[in-house]
Length: 112
Length: 114
Image (cartoon, rainbow over all chains, first blue to last red; front, side, top):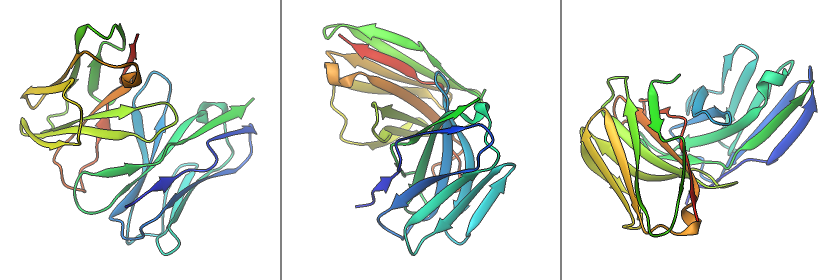
C-alpha cells in the first residue's frame, strides 16, 4: 500500500533563507508527483507536477525534484519570503487515473 | 480564485441536524470530487462523480450522502453526524478523471459537529 510521508510537519525559518521540504513515498511505481500549497481559508493550489519520467520541474523560485528509486521528492524554495508561509502538500498518483495519495503536509512559516 | 466555489465556508451543526454542503465549478469540467481533510492527516478521497455518475465511494459512512445534479454542481448532504466528522471538506473538479487532468480545488467548508 502506497504511503506518503512529509517531514517535518512544521518548519520556521527567517526570511531570505533557502529551504528544502521533503516528501517520501513507499512504492516507487508512481505515475506522477505533485506539490500543492494550501493557505488558510483557501483551497489547494498546484505548484509543480513531475511526471515519473522527469527528474525535476522549476517554477520561479521553486524547484521540485523526483528520485523514484529512493522514493523521494524535494521542494526547494529559494530566497524565502513571508508570503511563502503556507502548508505544502505532496501527492502521488499511482497510475493514470484520478487517485491521489496525499502526505499530511509541512506547515511553513517564514519570519520577517 | 480557482473557479471552484463552496458554500457555506463554515458550518456548526449538532449531531441530530441535517445540513448540506454545496460546490459549484465554473470551469466546464466533467468530474467532481469530495475530500475530507482532518487536522494533521492526509486528505481522504470520499466520492468521485464523472459526467454526473458516481464512480467512487471510498467506504464513506451513509450519514454522508452525495448528490450531483449536473456536471457543475455537487452537494454533500449530512445527517446524524459524529464529532469525529469535524473536518475541512474540500471539493475539486477536473476536466476528466484520467491522470493527465489536474484537479482544481475549492476553498473548503470548515465543519464542526457539536
